[in-house]
Image (cartoon, rainbow, N blue to C red; front, top):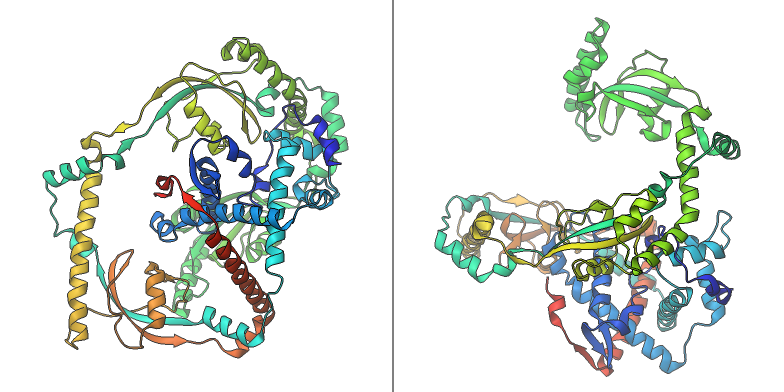
Amino acid sequence: MLDLMRKNAQSWGIKILFGLIIVVFVFWGIGSFRSNKAAVIAEVNGRPIAAQDFRIAYERTLKSLRHRNPNLSQKEIQQMRLKEQVLNQLINAELLREKAKALGVDITLPELRKAITSIPFFQNKNKKFDPNLYKKILKLNGLSPATFEKDYSENLLIEKMRAFITLPAKANLAEVYDMYKFAKEQIQIEYLLFKLDNYLNKIKISNNEIQKYYNENKDKFMDPEKIKIAYLLLTPENLAKQEKVSEQEIKEYYESHKNSFFQPERVKARHILIRLNPDASKKELKQAEQKIAKIEKELQKGKNFAELAKQYSEGPSKKNGGELGWFTKRDMVKPFADAAFALKVGEISKPVRTQFGLHLIKLEDKKAAGILPLKEVKEQIKNTIAQEKAYAKIQDLLDSALTRLAAGESLQKIATELGLEVKTTNLFSRKNIPQDLKGLKPKDIQALFDLPVHETTKTPFNLQNGYLLVSKLEAISPKPLPLEKVKETIKTILTRQKAQKLALEEATKTLSKLQKKEKINISLKTSKPFTRQGFIPELGFNPSLAQEAFLGKVNTWLDKPYEVMAGYILAKPIKHIIPSKQDFAKEQEKWMQVYQNFKAKQLFSAFINSLHQKAEIKIINPRYLKY
């Protein structure tokens, strides 16, 4: 089947959400670059790991990490040594491939076929593998089935090796409970905080200091490389504007897709919100109820609901008179939805409590569930049909455009004949990519910057919903920003550095006094309980402090100051909170699996370490590991 698919895999198609597949394996698809990249970050037994491969893997890992932890700072990323971790994963993958080859372990064609055909992104609505969808997705991402299958086979091989290596991992109940206690144990600390803010006003920065820092750190204040391009978008949305759709086509589409135009019951409403936390005290609840009661009295006197919402509401819809527009039951939290849908048009609810607070709701209109009439969805259907027609033509249009570009025709001439617009960007850097280009992969952005001025791309760039043809108009090399533009930034940096020094000095002196049992005039604060993972409420992420707090003696000051987001602290552990066996019993099954995974990871790490010890690993360009 897979061989059969290769026959028609060379032509261009429409790019769709292939990124969804890539997230399955962060390092998938990277090996295909290895042999073609001059810039090498490392070598494993003589085999290169390309810098481009490393950059792609790092960007994917960082994106995934930020998705799970949106507030993760650059400093925390450096503390995690994320770049080193990513490079290590690439090295491990190379070592495993070599070991598998030495052991004769391979992925058979039936194994590969079974794995690929079970990927949901290649399956139709009936959850069956769809060869046409498979070919389309690969084409739209500039991949041949042969390339994809080779890379995917390598990934499967690594997973097969991992499964083989970790087969002996077994869970022991006593060990699992110990692990559970270790993971779930919490600690509280008392601490003295030396806030940087308390030192900032004491610091003066001279112009000479600013000039000196600027001269020594010009590389930190660069105006980055910028380019200006002209580009033509070939997407179904763009090309659809030229497509004609008849009334008959619209009617036929509507009749054959009626179920897709089903609209659940909807209401249109306004509300007035008085905010109240879910865990509010009785006093806070009473105050909120009094506010709501006052508003109710004004409504009973005939006051306008929208005007009262503008005056009293504490929600984001306040400026619009509490207007919420049309919504279904699913769109709102249950207590709010239940109350709103129980009202008659024009009726105002009694106070309704939700997780956000107390609401008064006024129902303004209501629509029953049913199929939307044709007149309401006509434009939507017209656009859909037009895009489908454009979709069918885009391959031929792209091939034609590429042929004409190769023959020397201009992008503007091609666009004019297609009835499309060539857009021109302002100068932009890698960090402020124009919106239309946001779907480009890192390697494509690099190719844009590498393109010589006044040249047009010979191959298209893949976007999420189509293709991009580009002519480069201008390029500006990176250069240091003038001192005047960065003077305040440097002043802030130097001020903070000096404040950190003063805070650390005072913290160190205070620690000495505490160790001598001398009295101090700084008030103690008590942290909320935290685990060994390193996040300390109100203080931030600090694995070193967390670890040493658990190791420290209760009611004894730890032997050094610790840097936190707000400054420096001195800390002493005051209480260990041990999870009970009853708590463990509720989660035993889950933790048995966690422990088995932990043992498997230990086995795998030991195996990888043995491969590292026997391998010749060279870091060729350590500059790629700098932050």
